[in-house]
Image (tube, rainbow, N blue to C red; front, side, top):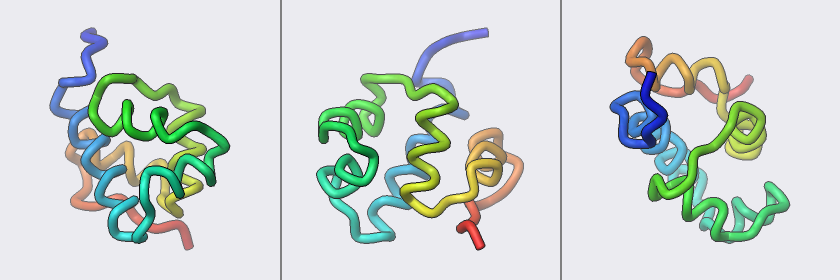
Length: 86
């Protein structure tokens, strides 16, 4: 199992996170503030310079109002879009 941030699944997940942030008209600074993290945290995971762990993914998904399970399914290529949380 590779740990690269450049695997197709990880790239799809990062792209979905960026798209969700942009769709919600949030800047990296605004998202970072919601997460209680520095802006560099968001920048680094969006550019693939930093891997995010499962707990961080859940926090980011909550902040972006995404269904984390849908996001993971999208990363695996199972669904076409991460679903918003009802």
